[in-house]
Image (cartoon, rainbow, N blue to C red; front, side):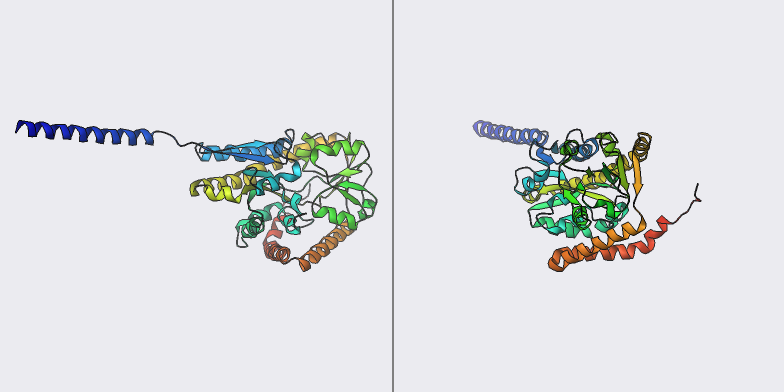
Length: 364
């Protein structure tokens, strides 16, 4: 009987030890934080391109904060991982997990990319959010286009009208564009050709040198806040022509490789998308639009001469843009689908939006 009790006690002791070992192991495992997921972000922006670079970095910081450090992304300036115009291909091929750039740079792949960047005299800043996420659900069209290239798009940044063309001689009407060599990408380049100008595609870091060497007669790049911070002032080009018909607003893209995205847990997907929307369409807008008025005053006080295109010139530019879009739509079914979505949306939305343009306060 005693031996039986001893054996039972022995087996109970072994069983208790095993259970305690399992319990300890489970507790120890639950207290070990999971290894963070780490991504690299290639961007099209130089380190001194403060506002755009800040926008890319802000996305990374917001994702890290919202995910509690589970998803960590490091942004790299242009030429560290790839060049300005190769970010899309790097993401598409999975050479980097994500990127931050501008859809207009990808127009050589197919023309529909420009419809998600900026089209002359088309989408305004406030219209983008409504078209993308309102009843039109333009975001689904954006995803459909990028899916063909193994990429998932998100809003990278959004800003309003740019500052117009900086030039070495005045542009008072569309007739003055003839013979000018002007740095501009996107559909604005197509309009310039129709006006008799020669568009030149250059990354931001090569603009000033090209102007000094006489390789271009002028350029556009961004809003007053960004142009001023990059040193684009009257010392390199004394004239500016408004309005910024070539880019009445500008949507940028945050890109993620589709295969990488598919592996991400659902909660991190939601966090990433929320971060892109918050940074790109709220924080960035507030940052850049809030800085524009003061920088415009700096330009005016610095001696820049501003010329305003007349109504006839703007009508001519709109007519050219509409014709270019119609021709592209006639030969590209997807371009036609996106263009129709945007035009239908604007025709409907302008019935209400126009009251925001109405003069509420008396002129001073």
